[in-house]
Image (cartoon, rainbow, N blue to C red; front, side, top):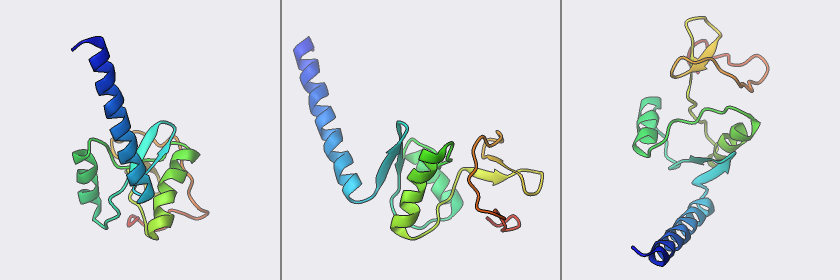
Length: 121
């Protein structure tokens, strides 16, 4: 395509993406932090189904790596008045947690005396 046609197509795509993002924001389905997009379908599911849906959407289950990302996840928790699964699991050492891929956590924001679920959180 000629340079001008490419520019027109890109402009049209940017416009459509902007409109879609606007609709999703109005419906409280997406939010952003630090250049990352956080999204939900607002439905309840078990952990494994959540991990799979995130992969199907081309992403991964949310794992807060800083206060802004934590706030983005908290946005959904508050709006939908529910919990959120995170991409964190307990390590082989009781009371210690790691990313799903086994990497150590670089950020946590636990409440005092949390997590307290004895392996069930």
